[in-house]
Image 1 (cartoon, rainbow, N blue to C red):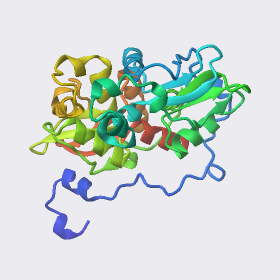
Image 2: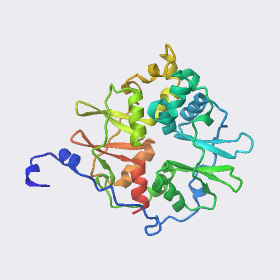
Image 3: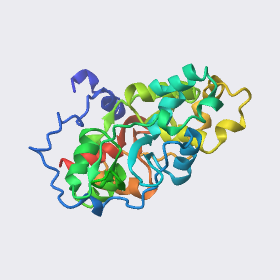
Image 4: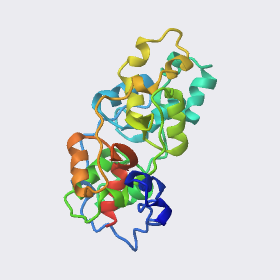
Length: 313
């Protein structure tokens, strides 16, 4: 820092930093994860799948009930993989991006009509997958390198036999030891939103910047954090229908995000080691911590940040 910044507090200095987390392009051939072994050893094998004919409403309800951020779509009889639906697809549908055109254009803004369309209409069909004989390192390459939160595992006939996620990798990698701290891998000066911002606007921000969560601030004080899962739960819990008057999508997405934010706010500080943070994420079953200094937001550390740091150590 230059001398003219000497009077700034540590929080202000963090906000001005570009951050240490950008270590250049990921090159797995030259920087292997060092994790051999079958991916099935860490995967979830009791995979819940739903058919492509299921309605969006029922699919979101299933994800909310089971606590899923992604749901494989497969043929009912054979379990042959046909696609996947993720929590970010739901945000997209609610106003974030191209999937919202189903509501806006095909159904002229009628949310009730659009949400009863089949999952086929918004699912991703070209799904990156793993095979049962792939290594954990292969999962790291897709999840970290391609920024996928989870990857289905299929057999030679494309039947789904498992799924591995960032959370599964984090549980495995958290047993390793790292000298890195939160400030080494966190994102600095995160994009934020505000308590009275509408669900529609937050959905657009998440889709535009490819975020799954946004810190919520009020008068420069951290108010909470809104996640893509909060938006999904707004629909999947049935809350979206309880205050509905006309069924127009503008009505259901105009609500302020403060009304759907979950009550518990967990934060961390920049000096904590990332192994400790990984364990806390696993224990609390959350995907990110806002990073604070003197009660002021200075950054964010996510599940993805930790998996990347631990895998590429």
